[in-house]
Structures are given as C-alpha cells and as structure tokens.
Image (tube, rainbow, N blue to C red; front, side, top):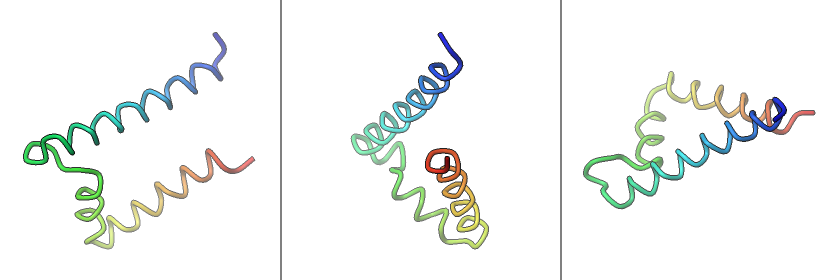
Length: 66
C-alpha cells in the first residue's frame, strides 16, 4: 500500500467520522450539537471567523491547488 492510498484512507476516515457525528447529532440534538449549531457558535467571535477562514483556505490549498 502506497503513501497516497494511506492518505486517501485517512481523509475518508475523517470524513466518515464527521458524517457519523452529524447523524448522531441529528438523532439526539440534546446530547450533541449539529455542525450548523457549532459553526453558528464559532462565527460569533472575530477569532472564530478568522479560524474558519484559515481552515477553509487550508482545505482549498490542499484539495484544489495543483
């Protein structure tokens, strides 16, 4: 197995965990906040908005730049 395949498996695992957390949050909203609620909470402060912008730029740099 090459390092490329391991990287793809790692990213798919993170994506799968995010989907599983979102499904769990939608099933039991009193125990776990959904992604929308988390982002709403984070975007209330300037630091949170900058952090979201940096994360979005990092994702774009790694997935869309060649």
